[in-house]
Image 1: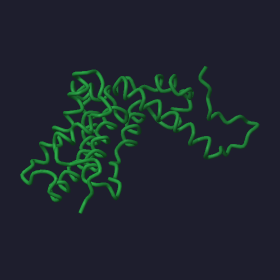
Image 2 (image 1 turned 60 degrees about the vertical axis):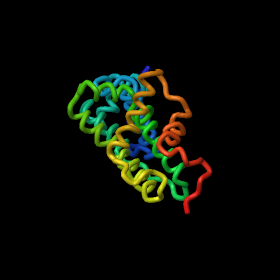
Image 3 (image 1 turned 180 degrees about the horizontal axis):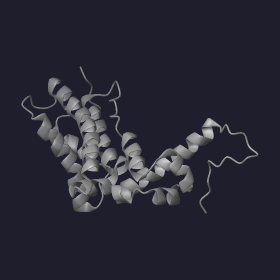
Image 4 (image 1 turned 90 degrees about the horizontal axis):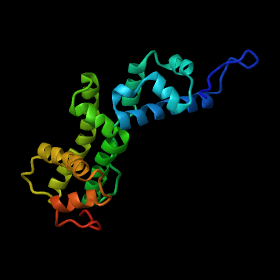
Length: 203
């Protein structure tokens, strides 16, 4: 049974604790993202989010006017590109960025989103998805440029093509095998920079 967690009974103070509201907001957004990951944007509806989150539709409608606003909020939550941690060697920086590609495609946005983009199911969603992936791709490109500067990758590397190949590598592995092994990132780094080792250090 879905319970209206934001109901304000007459017997209670009209001021709701901020923590309780934040918890409800988190449940709504987690449900929206899970539906987006698995099924794609068209399945993100108020009804579906209410059913998965356990939050009543009346509560959701207090925050979002319609499914489009829920979807926009879900996409906004993924829009900030990660920052590369300090102190990593070239090998580990490259592996870290590849894991961000994995996370974006597998868990942050999910294959449901990828499928929707491939058939251009929703042009507005496609554009937003590309912005999110390109923000992460810019991080990958920056790491590759640093690897070129460090002499770990050949100087004439076409960065844009390399980034597309790295993203495509994940999708290719998924399409061929139905899953992507834990060793995928290591394998890609070894293929691009066979001379690098995990314990390499920058000089």
